[in-house]
Amino acid sequence: MRRYGKHTDEDDIRTRPNRKGNRPRTHIRPKHEDAAGGLVLTVDRGRLTCLVEDRVVMAMKARELGRKAAVVGDRVALVGDLSGKKDTLARIVRIEERTSVLRRTADDDDPYERVVVANADQLAIVTALADPEPRPRLIDRCLVAAFDGGLTPLLVMTKADLAPPDELLELYGALDIPYVVTSREQLENGAAADLVREHLDGRITAFVGHSGVGKTTLVNTLVPEDRRRVTGHVNAVTGRGRHTTTSALALPLSSAEGGWVVDTPGVRSFGLAHIDPSRVINAFPDLVPGTEGCPRACSHDEPDCALDAWVAEGHADPARLYSLRRLLSTRERKEGD
Picture 1 (cartoon, rainbow, N blue to C red):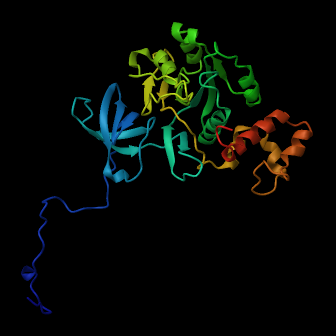
Picture 2: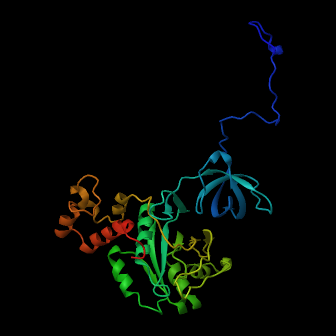
Picture 3: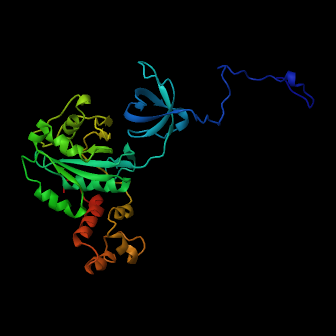
């Protein structure tokens, strides 16, 4: 073994060659100030379909983003081949700040939250009035997620020819949520799409609902030039629908005002493990002043809550307080209750 003394010549010191022949690693990442802006349309197994100007570009996430994932609706910055030609691949190097986020967990015991859609303005909650029966607990959970994520809710009721909407409208009347009621005949002749489109123009709207309620069929009528490949059916035994959408997909509305529709996979559950109940009160601005006398960390659903006395004094509608508490307690209730 060779030993070096105090006065070794640098030429005598052997260095390990870089066998890969590339540049040494550095923690300094490029800023990519010249990166092009794009919109994520859909995500499939690590490949992201993005709209860059008027071109559809396939891309993948750059390594420097680490575990940060881009989702449908994200505004991103891309570099590389942006031609959109077949077998080309760009890189997403930056995910812009989000204005809203729709999240859910698999169930209420799952700590891992899933971002469904980013930057949506509105959440259209689609429910059938019959076949399958409405699930108010699921609607409540979607409302909580919308209020928490900064989205405006829209209630879309389908199959009005099978059952009247009165009971459901009474349940959510105090929330003052905009709604649309459609029938199968309206869905077939295009009238349903016209009714719903009035609430969509100029907005990014995410559609959510459990399988079999007609969500994807409605989206197909709104964007007929880009229909989803398969529509499902309702199982006559279980009353559940078959999943027809396997990944979220953003589709442009062909109207003068513009707008986007995001079709999401049908859900069987909507977990709220990630929701901070203290933020739900923000969706009830008429009740917020009454919380000033609440004890610290008040859940607004306990005996010492100041909202009871405040509402009793006539400052707000008691139905609004009931609706708030129904939504706050939705995490403790099963969706089928």
